Image (cartoon, rainbow, N blue to C red; front, side, top):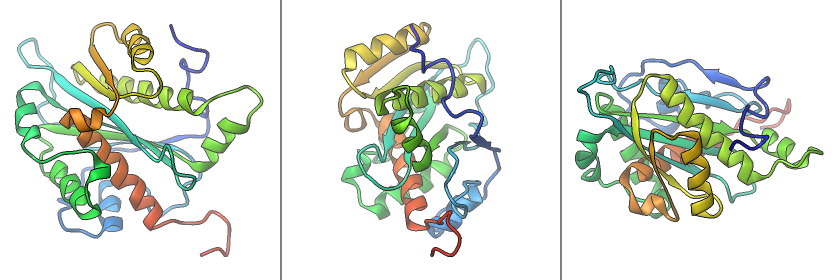
Length: 242
């Protein structure tokens, strides 16, 4: 069953969804220019949380004979004190998953910044087969959740971000058949919760899922590269601070 926090986004009235934009090929672009071309608000102060969807796979039209999509979820920024917490999904057709495993995706923390950006650029050139999205939770919103009178834990915030991202993908018309998620809290409890919310989808929640499943590794890279771009080009909300 849903917790009292799972039915709605806690700060929905303040948060904006970034409109989907068709981006040019991003390969070899500097970090800020790459993300601006994609439509991510890297050049603005990160006060409000936001959701971003990359262009959907062109083969995502649904029909009875089409194979489904495999989706992975991971995050970046849960431990650090500074900056946003970014949750990401990456999804591809079941028939393309073998090709994805051959691209060299691995736990983003085990890759250099250059390797992560190279793989992130590769995702942009494979849009026919791969899609991704992120939920970027601003430091202000994290602080608001941690300090409000009604307890809203970081785990609850993480769970709700994951649930909303999966729902958003489904609402885009993507027929997801399997989901792999890096756990937050006990894997069995989290998996049971998600399976009740999405009964028609096979869900696997595991520790270190980003090192076990390439689709989670790809999501990990989307989250990490986006978070790094915000930190590397941080815009202060306070006037006169540079």
